[in-house]
Image 1 (cartoon, rainbow, N blue to C red):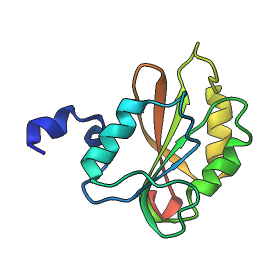
Image 2 (image 1 turned 180 degrees about the vertical axis):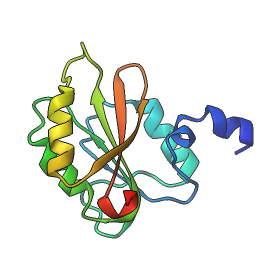
Image 3 (image 1 turned 90 degrees about the horizontal axis):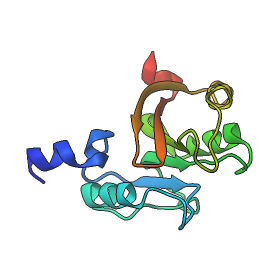
Image 4 (image 1 turned 180 degrees about the horizontal axis):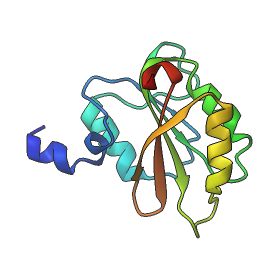
Length: 139
C-alpha cells in the first residue's frame, strides 16, 4: 500500500498496521460499517477473528448498540486477549441512529472496565469510534 493509499484508508487512519491480528466483538451482518471492516482486513492482510479466537491479538474492535447487554462487560471481554498498549476501538451508532448509546453510559462503562479514552474518530456514516487504552498503555 502506498503512502497516499495509507492516508485515505480508514483502517490506517485508525492506527491499524499490516500483519496485525484483529479480534471483532459484537459483529452483526446487517449493522456494522462493512467498508471499515474490509479496510481493516485489506490493510492487516488478515481476516478479522471472532470471540471464539483464543490466542493473543494485536487489536480489538467492539461494535456495541444500546440493548446489546452490558457495555462494561463487553469492554472487559475486549481486554482478555490483548497485551498492554494494544489497540481497542469501541464503535457505537451516532446520535439519532438506532442503537445509539448515550455518551455518559459509554464513559461510565469505560471507567468500570479499567480503560481510558485516548482518541476518537468517525467510523463511517452511522458509527462513531472511541480509541481506548489499558492503564499501562497511558501511564
